[in-house]
Image 1 (cartoon, rainbow, N blue to C red):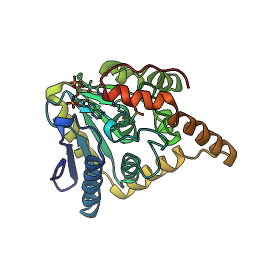
Image 2 (cartoon, rainbow, N blue to C red):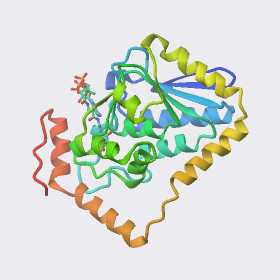
Image 3 (cartoon, rainbow, N blue to C red):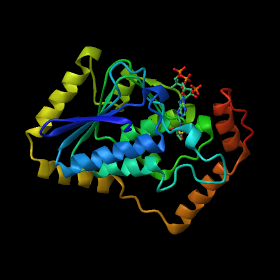
Length: 259
Ligand code: YZS
């Protein structure tokens, strides 16, 4: 059974992450279902996508399913990890993908939000970037998603503290485009999509692609790439990574040793 619900009109498709029992944790199955929904919408030439959680969810998504993270010795965020595939699918969708957020957004789901073209939220929304809590060596493409959206000091604060950024501040620092009343969240988002749907989709698709290509136009040397990969490997091979995943599963704070 699919873990997403899909609805669509002529030009707007809505994908609802619908595994609330697991707080919409981004398991491989949920992520694959989102990707499949995006593929189907693209085939049907649906121009604009809205990504949401079911009405009233306290948690929009709890992030990567920690139970599916490798326990040690393997990159937890490798190129073909399903979350990484999803982030590229959102970036490459040939029309706007709008995140409509009610509730809290954690870790990999926060990265998903950053990858969406726009974010509309109500006051229940808050956002936490958690790798430093879970000992995860976050990857360069993910860091770039934040750098391309936020002032670098704000992005660093999010990564270094792993604390939730509440809605009002998220608006001020540019995580979200519009902060609207809870009861207007859907109508506001649909109106935004309706406005966009009157514009040239050919034009928007090529503009979105240029934003994507230009925002990734960073050259790094092979040795810098290999050095960063080597540093990341030391982290996912470390005691601290294993300890943090175990601590999460045992519902206790991690005891980091710095090794
Ligand atoms: O006790 P059961 O078995 O019912 O399970 C609990 C939680 O363990 C489980 N759960 C998760 N399982 C897998 N992956 C998750 N991300 C996850 N989050 C929660 O869901 C059941 C209900 O959770 P409770 O904690 O009892 O619910 P509640 O008291 O309402 O608290 C909700 C929050 C969202 C505040 C709480 O569950 C929480 O703090 N979850 C972890 C959020 C998080 O840190 N996510 C980041 C995951 N990491 C990533 O996305 C990246 C890899 S990274 O670390 O790099 O950012």
